[in-house]
Amino acid sequence: MATLYTHQGENVRKTWLLMTIFLVVVVTAGWIFSQMFDNPVILYVAVLFSLVMNFSSYWYSDKIALGISGAAKADKIKYRDLLNIVENLSITAGLPMPKVYVIKDPSPNAFATGRNKEKATIAVTTGLLDLLEKNELEGVVAHELSHIGNNDILLSTVVVVLVGFVALLSDFFLRFSLYGKKDSDSNDRTQVVMIIAGVAFAILAPIAVSLIQLAISRKREFLADASGALLTRYPEGLANALKKISQSNIPMKKANRATAHLFISDPYNKKVKQSDDLEERKIGFFAKMFMTHPPVKERIRALLGEGV
Image (cartoon, rainbow, N blue to C red; front, side):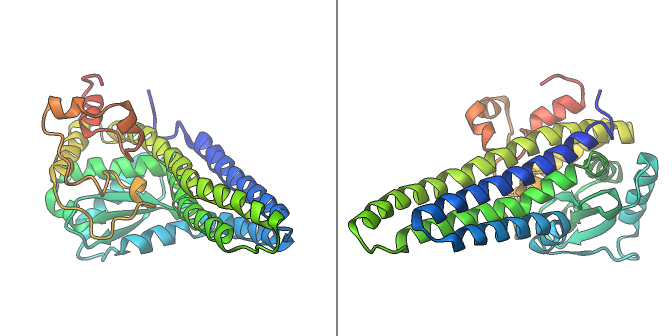
């Protein structure tokens, strides 16, 4: 059975592996382009940008994620009940109390971010606070604390920056291939090759990174649900919370593809209600590949021990 600390080391290793792969891919692409254009500046730029983005993704990705979401630090008086819930569950989990932020948004949702347990943050929307009962809110907070305890937050928050940068990088290569120099027939042929390579990179790179992003997210949501239920010893609280959240048809105002996988529920999926078994059966394997979160009905059944 999963526990709050089962996957700490695994997620740290995955994070460093992801950052290493990102560095190698960007530098390799920069070297190939520099050779074909006979311009070493391209390689230097690729190395510099890959190092800067890896550094930024590790040290500042949590601030970037909070900024993108429009989160503000929770007022100690106005959100006293929320802060008490977070503090009590943190003590139970044996974790330092994370910073607590609130997003002024009527859509019910929440996420955790930060590079480690000591620098962790939990952010919840005002819509979530208005919608849930206390035991349901405790279930959501326990779920997010599980992400913190397992170091999911490091892996998923780093992905925020790297996914966004890959999109910019692919656009750069595509533009460079379209507007590079054309001094001779040989360069004309090179230009054609570069255009094809640029288009392929622009299309395939974001898709590949997104699939990694989504696969990481789906697996970790099931684990955090299980660990959160162990923490509160009341799986019905989180199950009821997930049901209420999924039934909301209010999309988030500041939803962003780069941060969608952080949230407990897909901020883009609010208008799709899985109200019956027939609709649920329509979600096939291929469709699930492009979902940031597992189907809510599967998560609820797993929490309640009904099988998936």
